[in-house]
Image (cartoon, rainbow, N blue to C red; front, side):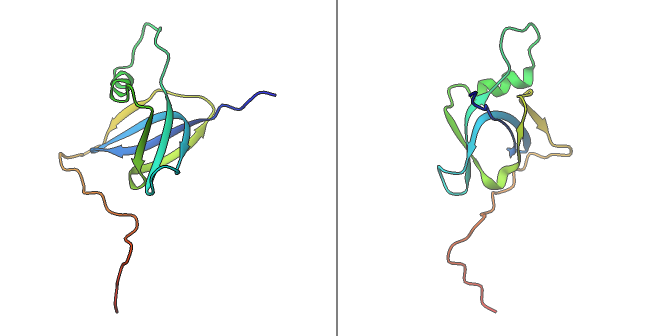
Length: 113
């Protein structure tokens, strides 16, 4: 019986850009409020044509065993048939100002009416 190898495309925002990366394991077990991503998948080296965007991501995540992305930064997570090209996409009309992360949950909220 063959084991199914899941591939997930994770799209998230980081410092005013949209990142698309591929991974074999995605969960919400490590830290509360974060999505845990393991076993990052990048295209095979060995081809003549190199994508500079994917190379930049490979360098950024070199040596990373597991990364934690804040839940509020995740745009979507898709299970896909096979990996594509990891990339960083500039946001149209972006600025140099990064919004301060807003909490998803605020314990002990005391809203009175």
